[in-house]
Image 1: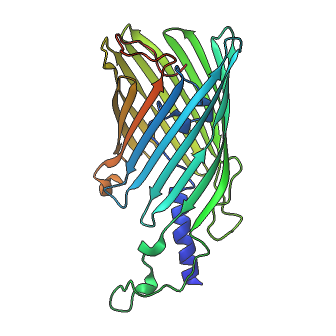
Image 2 (image 1 turned 90 degrees about the horizontal axis):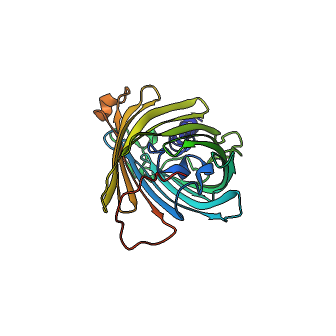
Length: 338
């Protein structure tokens, strides 16, 4: 019974660390489909592609690695007072010594309504998804593999797991409101709810082990300081069970009259989860590619083991215009959000 209990605790730990708190990204400015389903189709252009990679805890233990690839487009007509957005979200996450893998495939849909003479845009969206979780316990060690003198990996463990993979359906939804004061000032606030159906994530088919709902509050503003400089303050707040996260800061965008590099952006954010990290970001828009690099500098009690190192993250997004142009002559101050 004791060994059974220890096995339960071990794998519940992996579930809580790698799954129950959901996939995590620091960049919520351009990796928007992982922020709120209501962001689907909310950009200037025809199609949007985004690829993100995050590497975390490499200096402490087996690194946590997350890859996200997503796409969205939209349908709009001149006589419509709204826009329909659609997309595809693919996420892959690997965590811990047991190689706990999470694969997510979501299909988001959203509608964007123009209100108050297009000064206000109300957006709402939904994203059904299929999740696949798996782990490999062959790289794990158990106390019964100690033969009295030393550890012996050839000793078989007595406990047999019911299964080492599972597939389930999940559901997310969100709403967002954007106010365009004028061409130089706009404000956006949103709310998203993840894991609405609270799927069962137990590897022992226990009904009371369910993925908790996650609430996300977020907001950004676009403020023009000069003709060539914008400030983009923003925040993100997340709540999942007893876990919470407060993420706030800002980014400056500098525009250039250059055919190759039309803008450079840099920013700093603070993530408060027991004083978790300070995040530094830098990026640029090269041709039609928006490239953002973020680094989490760990300032929590974990810094003793991590030496201050946290996570490295790179996000590359690309938006196709309505009309193809052979050459881009001048920089255009046109943030990717509507």
